[in-house]
Image (cartoon, rainbow, N blue to C red):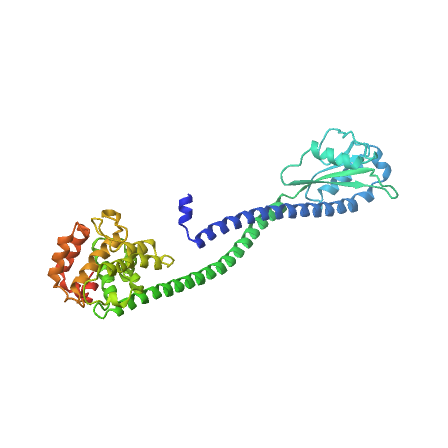
Amino acid sequence: MIRLWNKLSLIQRYTILSAAITFALAFVFSEAMLRWIERLAIEDEAKVGAEQVLRAIAPQLKSNDFGRTLSPQQRAFLDTVFRAQGGLNRAVRVRLWRADGRLLYSNVSESVQTTGVSLSAQNGYAVFAERQGRVDQAAAGLVRFFVPLTIEGETKPIAVFEIFYDLAHRLDDIRWRVRTTVPLGFFFLYVAIFALVDRGSQQLEKQKADLKAASIGTFLSLASAIDAKDTYTGDHSSKVADLAVYVARALKLPPEMFDDVRMSGRLHDLGKIGLPDAIIQKAGPLNPDELVVMRNHAERGFQILLKAPLSDRVKLAVRHSHERWDGNGYPQGLSGENIPLMSRIVAVVDAFEAMTSDRPYRKGMPVQVALERLERDAGSHFDSRITKIFVQLVRKDVTLSALGTRAVASS
C-alpha cells in the first residue's frame, strides 16, 4: 500500500486525501447539524403544542378540578379535544398528572398510576419530568414534552400534561434534507476547490515542463557547442543519439526509454566542454598527459548533469559510456553487465560513428571495415549482443552510417 501510495503523483494524492477528508467532514457536519435542527424542531413543536393545549383545555378546567377525579363529562371533553383534527391531531398519547403525582387522565386506557413525586415540592416539576422520561421511553419518531398548568399568583404547577407527539414524518423529512443538502454542498465546494487546485497544478506542471525543457535545451546547446568545436566531427552527438535509438528499438526496449537513450547519445561527450581546443582538435594521437585530461570528460559530464532534470539512467549513461566490457575502460573500470545498458549501447554506436568519420589525423574508415573492427572487439571492448545486433542492422541498411532519413524513419 505504501509503495503504491509513493507511486502516485502529488495531484493524485491530493485528490484521494481531500476526497476522504471532505467525505468525513460532510458526514460529521451533517450529523451535527441534524442533531441541532432536530432539537430545534422538537422545541418548536413542543412550544406550539403547549400553547394549543393551554389555549384549548386550560380554560375549561378549574383549579379545584385537579385535586380530584375528573367527571365523565370532563373526560369526554378532553377526549373530544385530543381526537379533533387540528394542531393536536399528532398527539398520540396524552396524560394529565395531578400535583401529587397521580394520573388524572389519559386518552388511552391505562391503569391508575402514580409517579411518587409531588409537583408542589421543591424542584418537584424537574424531578417529575426527569423520572417520567426514564420510566416510559418514547417510541421511535415520537417526542415527549410536558405542559405545566399553573394558576395566577402561583409558581408551582397544579398539574402537568404529558404529551407524546408523532414527529416521525417531519423528522424523516428533516433527516433526508440535511443528509442530502449538506453532502451536496460539500461536494460542490470540493469540486470548486479541486478545479482551482487542478488548474493551478496544470499551470505548475506546465511551468515545470517549460523549465525542464529550457534546462535540457541548455545542456543540448552545450553538446552542440562541443560538436561545433571540431569541424571534422560536425553533428557527432546527434548521429550517435539517432543510432542509439535505432539499436534500442532493435533490442525491443520499452518505448518510454527511447527518449533517455537519445539523450544519452546527445550528452555522452558533454564533459568535453571544458577541454582545451588544442586537445579536442589535435591533429594526431594524444600524449599520456593529454589522454588523462581527455578521459576526465566522462566524470565531468556526469558532474555537470547531477542536478539536471534528467533520469538517473541518462546521467549514468554519460558517466560510463567509455567503460569496456572487459573492465579496462574509464572512469570506474566497470565490466560486463555492471555497465549500464544505455552506456553499452552508446559505446558501440559512438565507436562506429567515430571510426567512419574523418579526423584531423586520418580519414574515416569504410563502413564494412568499421563493422569488422566492432566484431573483433565484441566481448572485450563492447557488449557482444549489442554489437551483433548493431552490425546486422547496418549490414541490412548501410545508409545507417550516414543516418539517412529513410533509414531512421524506417525503424
